[in-house]
Length: 284
Image (cartoon, rainbow, N blue to C red):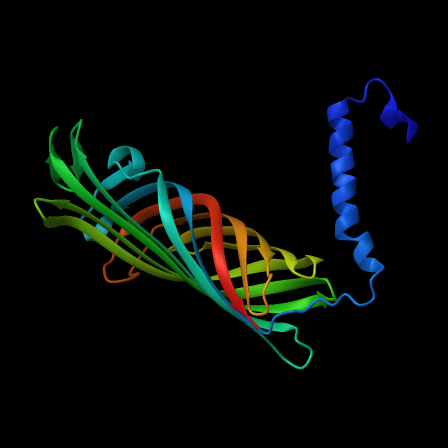
């Protein structure tokens, strides 16, 4: 089997790739197993703050009691940028005599504005706006999350956790013409989610963290889906300070709202984003 790796059919590029993978695994695992003095320090408390440039795609369809009659892609129809700066932060506390319980709080904020002169006519509610109308639009999305994790497996280097919690999503959409709000809708949807989280020490100061949180909910009045995937590579070179680079992919879709937030409306809202995030962290 080993001899097959060196046959003419196995390219030099593949050989280099296999060698790199072998060296990474060796550096990450074997040296550390032979060093009894190496200690991995789990955090009792941490707080982080960061931001990233996210690629965004949003669709909105509103009608019903709010009076909106809108069905379009915000980036194409109203000129919203397909990329936005996003703010994200959070805190985590590990407690219990076995240190297997965790409480996490998180915040995400994306605030978007657009100014567009219509190239074709646009119908919103009972109004038709002709070509050449200048529209100022706003679409803000925030996510406030509270999660509880339980570590069902934990050793000196790996922690596996099951998660349950609540997402609250304030969503604001408005269209302005001549500095007056023509149509708007606001939604706040508290929704339960379930998830899974992995923490792995590559070396004592370099950590990989992964988590996924998912919701699917269907009732006579609402249908919703959330998926939130995060992968972080975190480096903690100082006693209480560190930083990390992560990838976040988020998608949600809700349909047929009734009596959520300040105004009733029926329709659907869908937003997806993905991007790389850099953050700083304080921990002890």
